[in-house]
Amino acid sequence: MSVQLNVQGLSRHFGGIRAVDEVSFSTAPGQITGVIGPNGAGKTTLFNLIAGTTKPSAGAVTMDGAAITGRPAASLARQGLVRTFQMTHVFAGHTVFENLYRAALFRQFPSPWSLFNPWGVRRGREEAARQAEQALALIGLESVADEQADSLAYGLQKILGVGMALTAMPRLLLMDEPAAGLNPVETVAMADLIERIHASGIDVVVVEHDMGLVMRLCQKLVVLVNGRLLAEGPTAQVRQDPRVIEAYLGADLDKEPGLEPAVEARAAQNGTGHSASVATAGQGAAKVSKPAPMLEIKDLSVSYGAVRALDKVSFAVEEASVCAVIGANGAGKSTLMKAISGLVPVAGGEILLEGQPIQNLSAERRVNLGIALSPEGRRLFPELTVRENLLMGAYLRRDQVDITVDLERIYGYFPRLLEREQSQGRHLSGGEQQMCAIGRALMSRPRLLLLDEPSLGLAPAVTLEVARAIRQISQDGTTIVLVEQNARLALKLSKHAVVLETGRLSLAGDSEEIMNNPQIAAAYLGHAAEASHHA
Image (cartoon, rainbow, N blue to C red; front, side, top):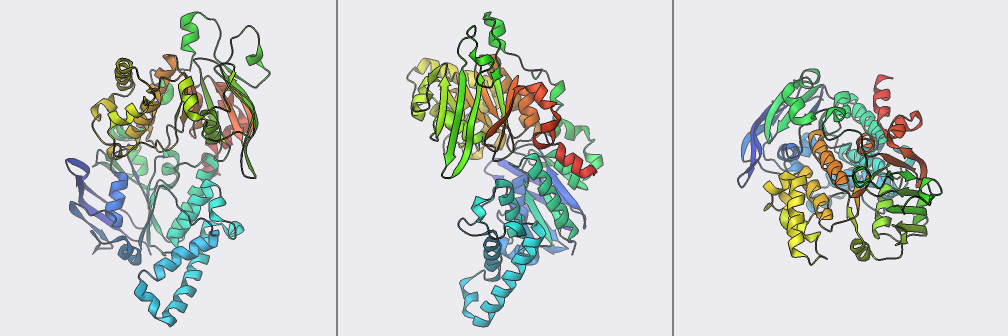
């Protein structure tokens, strides 16, 4: 069943931009091949070209010696080449099995004309049911087969998305960022699934930023930088290539200037003498000798119907500090950010900004008071330029001179945005979009900046660039609440942290102590994948 994929001189140009530029490589039958590279390297475009969703400007692709260049995705699927996407979309209102069955049924009847043969319809339905059952067993979701797909945790939805691709009975599966947005435990489950898929006789080519996952799974690596092939070869060889280390992996965070252990710059500079900290309500935040915290959460509860997303969460964040909020997917982190910014109503408790309750104020009013959110997923205006997106963050301001000053400040944090100032949001790489989203939030001149998953989907080198900017923003006096799936990064950037678990506060304290806490290491810091691999 194993296949060999050959890519020769593949290129795709968008105007003057060479998204993929004369890329050539091959996969080895019976192996898992990883395609890696920084954001904007051309990985997803390369997948689109191979899978038939984008036509190449030049070059050729063959599978087992047969030309497949430019063939539509449906035709390639019938030949055995199928891809998954970074974002998973399930059929809402249908069970897990029904999702698999509908995917298989679509492949049985690709056109309306195929429905005119009653005998063929019966056989097609039977075959679709058989394929759905096989896929269900392979992805290991038999226990939730009758549950609504859209009610599943995000990690299970991503596994279901893989299962829907498997109903096509592929010989070669292209997987685009299968671990994006997954917590460490879910990442292990995805890695286990990919290994089961490979063991079943299906070859896999995977685009992935999680280098731990890549090193565990892949026997061969293909490295792209700026649309061109940088390196190709066995994983052990490529990971030692200095060019790859410099271009993709970046340097060790612990050794990077500008990312030393976090300190509260303003407290040290202005002589106030109070240190920025986080505490559970009733602890250090309540001392009379200290001014009111920048942010205080008291017994905060948020519900979505019958589901309690946050349950009596309490903590405080002092001025000019970085507070990390970590926890597994579904822990309530994004809900917390939305509650603070006024995007979801609270069911109970208080949110205080410098001692003043704000839980009943509108989102617009909270922006005026100095709260800004950089949301998960960036959510730029795709048709607006970088400059126009940034100016949207100053929509409520009227101080034109200071707005210009703040634009220059944003370009100082993110010099790449100045280079792309006139580029539309849709043409930016993921890293550039994230920089623009943070810059847009800063344009409202917040006292409290909420950053929701700023490193999600970013390559290590780009993550490092964003991390340095976050550190500088904090040192310039802005209080930051940082929600991060990358717990190590969040704890590195912060002095204090809180840990959420299924909507409840499970731990609050010094970031370094939390990082070294053996009780949460496996769940939040990614040790589980390594432990599973070596077991």
